[in-house]
Every structure is written in structure tokens, then in C-alpha cells.
Image 1 (tube, rainbow, N blue to C red):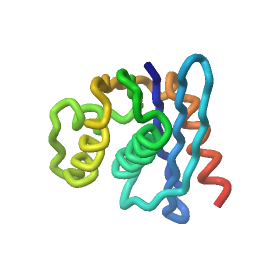
Image 2 (image 1 turned 90 degrees about the vertical axis):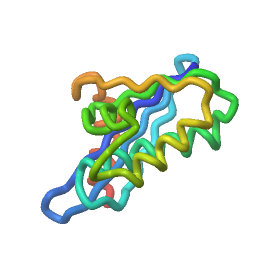
Image 3 (image 1 turned 120 degrees about the horizontal axis):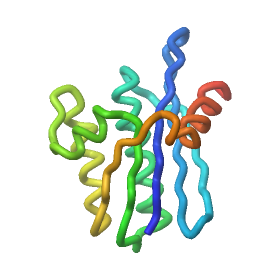
Image 4 (image 1 turned 120 degrees about the vertical axis):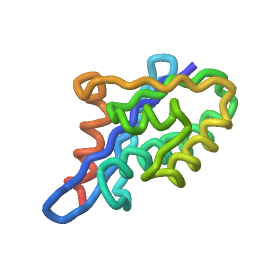
Length: 128
């Protein structure tokens, strides 16, 4: 079992985006941060999750149970409904990645509960 937390951050001044990803397995943390390309913050949330699940596939391919946490209601609602009007392709990409794991439980959490991933995204934003 592992837990993955993702978040996106946006710099409104120069229209840049970043992703923060926190993975916890056996009380060990993996912290990732990336500058990403997106059209808006909602899309950036999907892309952050895609980066996270790509990392899981590469580094934890035999994982049976994944708890995924995000503070993006649009992202979690889209995953639950398996539908998004505005982000259908990024949602399809993410759903395909999640299919690599027998069980993925998608959970919405508050901004406060997602502070680790948020801090990583902010750090990535300020590094570029």
C-alpha cells in the first residue's frame, strides 16, 4: 500500500505552472517537484497527478493498493465520474495510468491536509 499526494501551483504573473508530488510508503517519503506546461490551474492539477502516477508505474509497478489524495475537487470528481467536459484527454490519460494498479482509491482532501505536495509545488514554481 502506498499514498500519493499531488498538487499544482500557478504563478499568475508569468503564467507558469508547477507540480508537487509526495509519495509515502512504509513511512518513507519520496518528494518530487516539476515545472509543467498547462493552460490553467485545473489542467495543472490533472498533469500533476499524471506525473505522479507515471512515477509510481516506474518505481512501484507491483503495488496493489494506491490511495490518491488531491485538494482539487474537479480532479477527484472527474475521476469518480470518469468524465470531464473540459479536461477529457488529460482525464483519459490519468485513468489509463491508474489502471496499472489493481486498486486505486481517489480521495479529496483539504488544502491544509495537502500541505506537503503544495509546498513542493510552490518550491518548483520559485526555482524557475
